[in-house]
Length: 226
Image 1 (cartoon, rainbow, N blue to C red):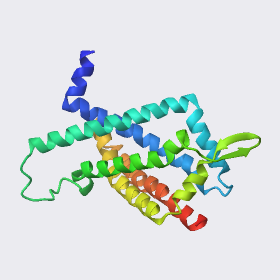
Image 2 (image 1 turned 30 degrees about the vertical axis):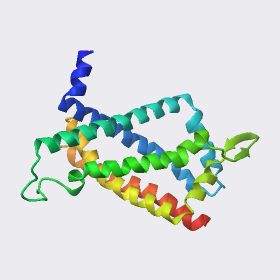
Image 3 (image 1 turned 180 degrees about the vertical axis):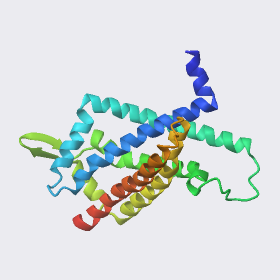
Image 4 (image 1 turned 90 degrees about the vertical axis):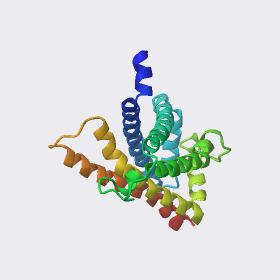
Protein backbone atom coordinates (compact mmCIF):
# COMPACT_ATOMS: atom_id res chain seq x y z
CA UNK A 1 0.00 0.00 0.00
CA UNK A 2 3.04 2.28 -0.19
CA UNK A 3 1.82 3.72 -3.50
CA UNK A 4 -1.37 4.87 -1.77
CA UNK A 5 0.64 6.65 0.92
CA UNK A 6 2.90 8.24 -1.69
CA UNK A 7 -0.12 9.38 -3.72
CA UNK A 8 -1.85 10.91 -0.72
CA UNK A 9 1.31 12.65 0.45
CA UNK A 10 2.54 14.04 -2.87
CA UNK A 11 1.35 17.27 -4.46
CA UNK A 12 0.73 15.60 -7.81
CA UNK A 13 -1.22 12.79 -6.16
CA UNK A 14 -3.41 15.18 -4.21
CA UNK A 15 -4.08 17.25 -7.31
CA UNK A 16 -5.04 14.05 -9.09
CA UNK A 17 -7.49 13.16 -6.32
CA UNK A 18 -8.88 16.71 -6.47
CA UNK A 19 -9.46 16.31 -10.21
CA UNK A 20 -11.08 12.86 -9.94
CA UNK A 21 -13.35 13.81 -7.03
CA UNK A 22 -14.23 17.06 -8.80
CA UNK A 23 -15.27 15.26 -11.98
CA UNK A 24 -17.26 12.73 -9.94
CA UNK A 25 -19.08 15.58 -8.19
CA UNK A 26 -19.80 17.14 -11.59
CA UNK A 27 -21.47 13.87 -12.59
CA UNK A 28 -23.40 13.94 -9.31
CA UNK A 29 -24.59 17.49 -9.99
CA UNK A 30 -25.77 16.40 -13.45
CA UNK A 31 -27.87 13.59 -12.02
CA UNK A 32 -29.10 15.71 -9.12
CA UNK A 33 -30.31 18.57 -11.27
CA UNK A 34 -31.94 16.13 -13.70
CA UNK A 35 -33.99 14.56 -10.92
CA UNK A 36 -34.88 17.89 -9.33
CA UNK A 37 -36.36 19.08 -12.62
CA UNK A 38 -39.39 17.04 -11.55
CA UNK A 39 -40.19 19.98 -9.26
CA UNK A 40 -41.42 21.76 -12.39
CA UNK A 41 -43.97 19.03 -13.08
CA UNK A 42 -47.45 20.23 -12.25
CA UNK A 43 -48.61 17.09 -10.42
CA UNK A 44 -48.66 18.20 -6.80
CA UNK A 45 -45.22 16.70 -6.17
CA UNK A 46 -46.06 13.09 -7.04
CA UNK A 47 -43.18 12.49 -9.48
CA UNK A 48 -40.69 14.27 -7.20
CA UNK A 49 -41.74 12.29 -4.10
CA UNK A 50 -41.49 8.99 -5.99
CA UNK A 51 -38.05 10.03 -7.24
CA UNK A 52 -36.97 11.02 -3.70
CA UNK A 53 -37.99 7.62 -2.32
CA UNK A 54 -36.11 5.82 -5.09
CA UNK A 55 -32.97 7.88 -4.43
CA UNK A 56 -33.00 7.03 -0.72
CA UNK A 57 -33.93 3.34 -0.90
CA UNK A 58 -32.31 1.89 -4.03
CA UNK A 59 -29.10 -0.01 -3.02
CA UNK A 60 -27.10 1.10 -6.07
CA UNK A 61 -28.05 4.73 -5.53
CA UNK A 62 -27.19 4.48 -1.84
CA UNK A 63 -23.72 3.19 -2.78
CA UNK A 64 -23.26 6.14 -5.15
CA UNK A 65 -24.40 8.41 -2.31
CA UNK A 66 -21.63 7.11 -0.05
CA UNK A 67 -19.12 7.69 -2.85
CA UNK A 68 -20.47 11.23 -3.18
CA UNK A 69 -20.02 11.92 0.55
CA UNK A 70 -16.46 10.56 0.40
CA UNK A 71 -15.74 12.67 -2.68
CA UNK A 72 -17.02 15.84 -1.02
CA UNK A 73 -14.93 15.23 2.09
CA UNK A 74 -11.83 14.33 0.08
CA UNK A 75 -12.26 17.27 -2.26
CA UNK A 76 -12.54 19.68 0.66
CA UNK A 77 -9.61 18.23 2.62
CA UNK A 78 -7.20 18.24 -0.31
CA UNK A 79 -8.34 21.67 -1.50
CA UNK A 80 -7.53 23.09 1.95
CA UNK A 81 -4.12 21.38 1.93
CA UNK A 82 -3.28 22.65 -1.56
CA UNK A 83 -4.45 26.19 -0.71
CA UNK A 84 -2.26 26.27 2.40
CA UNK A 85 0.69 24.83 0.52
CA UNK A 86 0.39 27.43 -2.25
CA UNK A 87 0.11 30.24 0.28
CA UNK A 88 3.13 28.94 2.22
CA UNK A 89 5.14 28.68 -0.97
CA UNK A 90 4.34 32.30 -1.82
CA UNK A 91 3.90 34.18 1.50
CA UNK A 92 4.38 37.55 -0.21
CA UNK A 93 1.69 38.50 -2.69
CA UNK A 94 2.34 39.51 -6.26
CA UNK A 95 3.20 43.14 -6.92
CA UNK A 96 0.27 43.16 -9.32
CA UNK A 97 -2.88 41.85 -7.67
CA UNK A 98 -4.43 40.46 -10.85
CA UNK A 99 -1.89 38.44 -12.82
CA UNK A 100 -2.99 38.16 -16.47
CA UNK A 101 -2.47 34.39 -16.45
CA UNK A 102 -5.13 33.79 -13.82
CA UNK A 103 -8.87 34.33 -13.57
CA UNK A 104 -11.05 35.70 -10.79
CA UNK A 105 -12.46 32.25 -10.06
CA UNK A 106 -9.03 30.55 -10.03
CA UNK A 107 -7.64 33.13 -7.59
CA UNK A 108 -10.57 32.64 -5.22
CA UNK A 109 -11.20 28.88 -5.40
CA UNK A 110 -10.66 28.54 -1.65
CA UNK A 111 -13.24 31.20 -0.81
CA UNK A 112 -15.71 29.89 -3.37
CA UNK A 113 -15.27 26.34 -2.11
CA UNK A 114 -15.81 27.40 1.50
CA UNK A 115 -19.05 29.20 0.65
CA UNK A 116 -20.29 26.21 -1.34
CA UNK A 117 -19.39 23.87 1.54
CA UNK A 118 -21.47 26.00 3.92
CA UNK A 119 -24.33 25.86 1.42
CA UNK A 120 -24.05 22.06 1.18
CA UNK A 121 -24.24 21.69 4.97
CA UNK A 122 -27.32 23.93 5.17
CA UNK A 123 -28.90 22.24 2.16
CA UNK A 124 -28.39 18.74 3.57
CA UNK A 125 -29.76 19.76 6.96
CA UNK A 126 -32.82 21.34 5.37
CA UNK A 127 -33.71 18.58 2.92
CA UNK A 128 -31.46 15.49 2.99
CA UNK A 129 -31.65 15.06 6.78
CA UNK A 130 -35.38 15.76 6.74
CA UNK A 131 -35.91 13.07 4.12
CA UNK A 132 -33.96 10.49 6.12
CA UNK A 133 -34.90 11.28 9.71
CA UNK A 134 -37.44 14.11 9.71
CA UNK A 135 -41.06 13.74 10.71
CA UNK A 136 -42.41 14.29 7.21
CA UNK A 137 -46.08 14.03 6.28
CA UNK A 138 -46.98 10.98 4.22
CA UNK A 139 -48.82 10.80 0.91
CA UNK A 140 -50.21 7.84 -0.96
CA UNK A 141 -49.89 7.10 -4.69
CA UNK A 142 -51.53 3.97 -6.07
CA UNK A 143 -51.80 2.55 -2.57
CA UNK A 144 -48.10 3.03 -1.71
CA UNK A 145 -46.88 5.41 1.01
CA UNK A 146 -44.27 8.07 0.31
CA UNK A 147 -42.67 10.79 2.41
CA UNK A 148 -43.90 14.15 1.19
CA UNK A 149 -40.54 15.86 0.68
CA UNK A 150 -42.19 18.05 -1.94
CA UNK A 151 -44.17 19.84 0.77
CA UNK A 152 -40.95 20.57 2.70
CA UNK A 153 -39.24 21.94 -0.40
CA UNK A 154 -42.15 24.15 -1.39
CA UNK A 155 -42.54 25.45 2.16
CA UNK A 156 -38.84 26.31 2.40
CA UNK A 157 -38.84 28.17 -0.89
CA UNK A 158 -41.76 30.36 0.06
CA UNK A 159 -39.22 32.19 2.21
CA UNK A 160 -37.58 34.90 0.09
CA UNK A 161 -34.35 34.72 2.13
CA UNK A 162 -34.02 31.02 1.36
CA UNK A 163 -34.60 31.70 -2.31
CA UNK A 164 -32.07 34.55 -2.44
CA UNK A 165 -29.50 32.52 -0.53
CA UNK A 166 -29.96 29.56 -2.89
CA UNK A 167 -29.62 31.73 -6.00
CA UNK A 168 -26.49 33.44 -4.66
CA UNK A 169 -24.96 30.06 -3.77
CA UNK A 170 -25.58 28.88 -7.33
CA UNK A 171 -23.77 31.95 -8.64
CA UNK A 172 -20.76 30.99 -6.52
CA UNK A 173 -21.07 27.41 -7.79
CA UNK A 174 -20.94 28.68 -11.38
CA UNK A 175 -17.69 30.55 -10.71
CA UNK A 176 -16.23 27.53 -8.89
CA UNK A 177 -17.12 25.20 -11.75
CA UNK A 178 -15.79 27.60 -14.38
CA UNK A 179 -12.26 26.99 -13.13
CA UNK A 180 -12.65 23.50 -11.70
CA UNK A 181 -14.04 21.93 -14.89
CA UNK A 182 -11.09 22.95 -17.07
CA UNK A 183 -8.56 22.44 -14.28
CA UNK A 184 -9.63 18.82 -13.74
CA UNK A 185 -9.04 17.88 -17.38
CA UNK A 186 -5.70 19.68 -17.35
CA UNK A 187 -4.58 17.83 -14.20
CA UNK A 188 -5.51 14.49 -15.74
CA UNK A 189 -3.43 15.35 -18.82
CA UNK A 190 -6.44 15.27 -21.15
CA UNK A 191 -5.53 18.47 -22.95
CA UNK A 192 -5.30 18.02 -26.70
CA UNK A 193 -5.00 20.55 -29.48
CA UNK A 194 -7.92 18.94 -31.29
CA UNK A 195 -10.29 18.30 -28.39
CA UNK A 196 -9.44 20.98 -25.82
CA UNK A 197 -11.54 23.73 -27.51
CA UNK A 198 -14.59 21.43 -27.46
CA UNK A 199 -13.96 20.53 -23.81
CA UNK A 200 -13.62 24.21 -22.96
CA UNK A 201 -16.91 25.02 -24.74
CA UNK A 202 -18.77 22.16 -23.00
CA UNK A 203 -17.33 23.35 -19.70
CA UNK A 204 -18.55 26.91 -20.22
CA UNK A 205 -22.04 25.73 -21.16
CA UNK A 206 -22.16 23.32 -18.21
CA UNK A 207 -20.93 25.91 -15.72
CA UNK A 208 -23.77 28.22 -16.71
CA UNK A 209 -26.57 25.77 -17.46
CA UNK A 210 -26.47 23.60 -14.32
CA UNK A 211 -26.35 26.45 -11.75
CA UNK A 212 -29.08 28.31 -13.67
CA UNK A 213 -31.32 25.23 -13.62
CA UNK A 214 -30.73 24.77 -9.90
CA UNK A 215 -31.40 28.46 -9.20
CA UNK A 216 -34.56 28.50 -11.29
CA UNK A 217 -36.23 25.88 -9.07
CA UNK A 218 -36.62 27.96 -5.87
CA UNK A 219 -37.55 31.01 -7.96
CA UNK A 220 -40.26 29.02 -9.76
CA UNK A 221 -41.62 27.60 -6.51
CA UNK A 222 -41.60 31.01 -4.82
CA UNK A 223 -43.67 32.65 -7.53
CA UNK A 224 -46.04 29.73 -8.15
CA UNK A 225 -46.60 28.37 -4.63
CA UNK A 226 -46.59 31.53 -2.48
